[in-house]
Image (cartoon, rainbow, N blue to C red; front, side):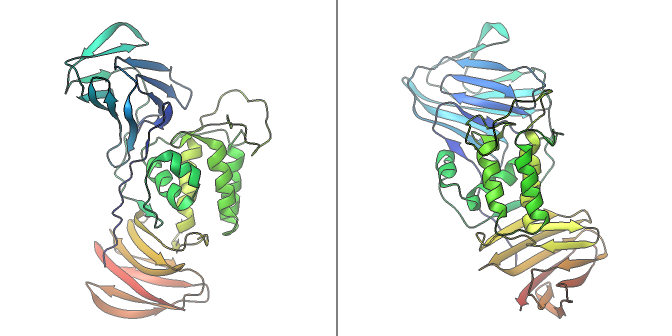
Length: 366
């Protein structure tokens, strides 16, 4: 009864000047056909840029953020032929690798050095420019809400459908460092409203709060900003406060709130689908890690929990809180039915688990 999510996350844009977060750093990169602008979203490191000596205009220009590998890939057709390069961050710096170029050499100019550089196909430029590196921990947590449309970001933003947006938001947050931010400043007020609605279980209005946050607090492909630079009237225009606060928690803490709509853990109790909006009528979540050494996969259809798989690293017992109305479920191990469990008045079932053991739950009946 294995639960899988086959979708691979690689949002892309054909628009000149789209901004992307560079995985494992706090830098955003604004991508043009012949220029890359690096800006530290956290406001601690200096900005810099690269100019690339391609002959334009470029056809089929594309910038793609590969959230499976944590790299930014840029490619297109120059006047002289096809080009492609990738950018990624490692412990020793930011790497730019030329994979395809139409000529023998590519000339690069850097804002922090007067000397141009020449790169051949297959060569890598190491940018040992000081930056705050974040090493992504292995995280297999994935969310799917049943949408598999084109991942072109301009279309995603135009559709403004959180069945599409939330899985990308959650996936990108795994690559971005956690930072403290000003909790009373700018778009943090919108983040607080999302948190309030989830805490109060306002399932049918929580997405309105998230929609305001998404529109006001993000530029490009989920690059957070402290103030709405598009002046959409979502918050009253105010004088920007100093000192500057990092907007990165708008992404990372926003992702934690998204996660809490589907999974919550408090002390010894784990709640499944505690704040499920009616718009999310079906979906899957897999690789969800608990603080108690549990890994959970679960699936729901027609707004009803359908099946679950739970792996425990340790021998333990915990309380599982099921969605409202479920009175019983079936528990299996190694495809063999063990027993039927009844919920208590609050929808809880107590599950004993052995070390390095997996159990399956299904037949959630009302």
